[in-house]
Picture 1 (cartoon, rainbow, N blue to C red):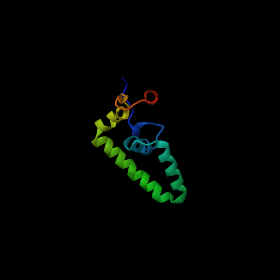
Picture 2 (picture 1 turned 180 degrees about the vertical axis):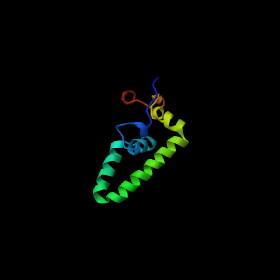
Picture 3 (picture 1 turned 135 degrees about the vertical axis):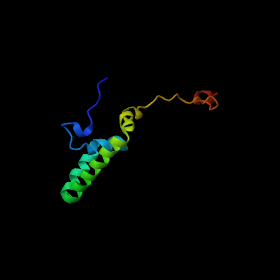
Picture 4 (picture 1 turned 120 degrees about the horizontal axis):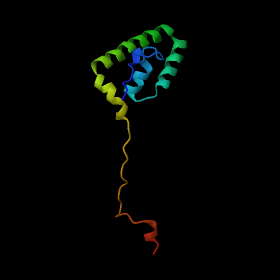
Length: 97
């Protein structure tokens, strides 16, 4: 299986903050991108400083916990659940007698 390129080394991301936080928090990265974009119009200095600080935090988290980041992709896979057997509950067709 080919290995994934780290977020910081990819050419299509800028520090990989939104994607990294999206993976860690379980939300869509596009929501974070929109929030940062709206924030840039409101207070650009604060948003850029926050983005850079979060970039350092995401990079540090990937260095400190590499196994967590690698196994995170399979953590959100849903497993099928067997339906509950409610034999003690009378079905509507059994009630009409």
